[in-house]
Image 1 (cartoon, rainbow, N blue to C red):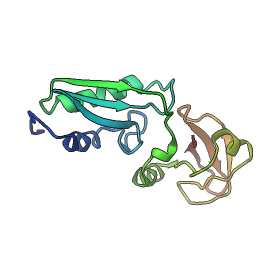
Image 2 (image 1 turned 135 degrees about the horizontal axis):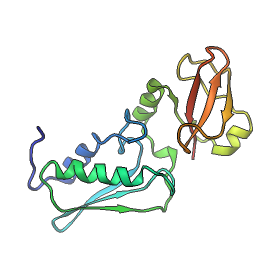
Image 3 (image 1 turned 135 degrees about the vertical axis):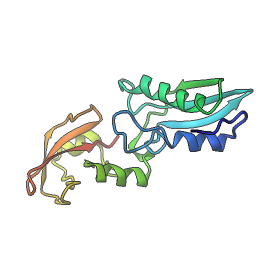
Length: 166
């Protein structure tokens, strides 16, 4: 059972949020994905600022609820979730640890510095997260979620998602 905190520090809250999984990719946390932008206090209220991976992300409401519940479970009643869209979320905010977790989960992590659609149209080779081959092809610009593209490895013949660079 989680210890109840009557007056947790901002550092405590960040640590708690590192345990909140992304609802679409449960092996990474909302902190590791860079969705949680800030944690602050406004008097007795804990304010968590989030930026969705894109403005139409269907998981945004679930993420806000999961964050609020993670804090409330530890005895904090006054929580406010604020969503900001600017600056827009970018895959540059994903931690290196999260990229490794994505790869181990079978999702190719975003290529650093690659433009999303331009890279896909240019036929950029994405390493297969299953066998490591760069002999891959883009099957669809949309994978299991809009923030991913669907690829296939020509060597191991397995399909996989690529987390698009934004």
